[in-house]
Amino acid sequence: MISNQARKHFLKTKRLAKSLDHNEIYKWLLTEGYYPENYVLPPVFFVSKIPSRKRYYSYETKKYSVPPKELIEVHFPKSDLADRTFGIIEPTIHNDIAYEISENWDQIINILFDPHNRVYSYSFPISLDAKNIGETGKLRSGRMIYEFLEMAECDLIAEAYKYKYLVKTDIKNFYPSIYTHSIPWALHGKAIIRKPENRKNYDFFGNRLDKLFQKSNDECTNGIAIGPAISDLIAEIILAAVDFQLSHKLLEDDGYLLVRFKDDYRVLCKDEGSAQKAIKIIQEELKDYKLTLNEEKTEITNLPEGLFRPWKSEYLKINPKKGKLNFSQFQEFYLNVLNIDKTYPNTGVIDRFLADLRDKKYNLYIPSSMKDIDRSISLLLLLADRRIKAFPSILAIIEEIFKENSNEDIKKIIEEHLNALLDKFAQNPENNRYLITWIVYFLKSNKLQINHIYTFSDPIEKAVYNNRKDTLFQNPDFAIFRSISKSKKAISMIEHIDIFKRDKNF
Image (cartoon, rainbow, N blue to C red; front, side):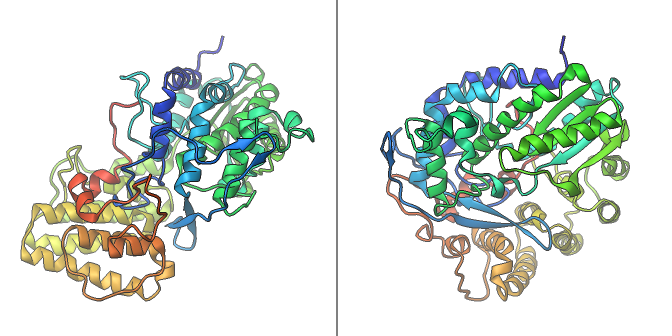
């Protein structure tokens, strides 16, 4: 009998997902699920109006006319040298994708949670509320990567004594590699859809989704937008089809336990030969969907070492007890984190450090005396050079410092620091769009001075700098931008980007 923790999680998710009302799914996908997750964009990018449940583009069995649209690109720094490009889908096409998903929810659930599937996914894209069955939550799945890693150190540890090796692997360039024709393959079966009479038969909702995703991305059949929750759902559907095939070839009874978070696989194996077999079979099954493994991120490790993140134990050693830090303590904590980051780069230790500089109510632990504030702000801003994607978290802490010490001296210090950075980044706006967008939002939302007049061409930068929605998609049925003043009243920066937040949701 299978009784592992991963399967229990899988079954619990299935129960909660089945309970969702179709209209609730539709609304959640159009509002909470429209934009990339909160740490990518400031809170002005917010959906406050959607149409009543409807389709914009009608179809006939052999005809489905949808006008092609281009994605609005959002450039998010994956590293100092590379961006991850998120995409914002034109609202009417996004609406119809959400409509198709919600209308066919029961079929999708059957695919995502097939009882014969033995690959246990931890990446269900819609926020579920275990306390209020049938309701959605506010949090997106971005925070779940951290929960997935915790799972690897908890749920997998509970089963690890049965095994000897751990395989870690993921899919290379996943979302940009998704072939839109593979959507109906996963939903209806490749053999069925490839029949000549079915290839363009739009009575199959998978074919309608295929068409809509193509049209959302200027008719490209390779790649879907990164960021919208509808894309995450499509990714889960495709990988659920892969997982089903893996389940027949890598049986638990034969010595395997497989779990997945999005495109990230973990496989417990009993011997090295089985581990190598697992990698080979995963690769074979992915090829059927025109996907491939990332060789650089594929590794076989001996248990128990592979279960743990080595940086975590180092971090726990240097993390001071909670409470207000004086500057010497803050500096020591800061320097120790830099040393860990140098040893284990791109691990997220800086994100964890920033999250641990405050309590659950967002009260800061860092020094707040006037003589320390300038130095503290300077040290925090220097972290952006080590981890650019942590920049909004840095600004969020600086905003809390400003709120706690709202006087002219602090105001001048913050204005001086951020205007210097803005002026530097604006000299090369194409390569600094992410940083510019967040600095401008911070200055404007806190009513601080922007010293120079800038001209930006990027629609995201322009929307924030001009505090206007007209650089984005325009349709009277949708409100997808709110003013900076309304955003400021609605939510603080530290609340907006808190991916480590632990609420009562599932």
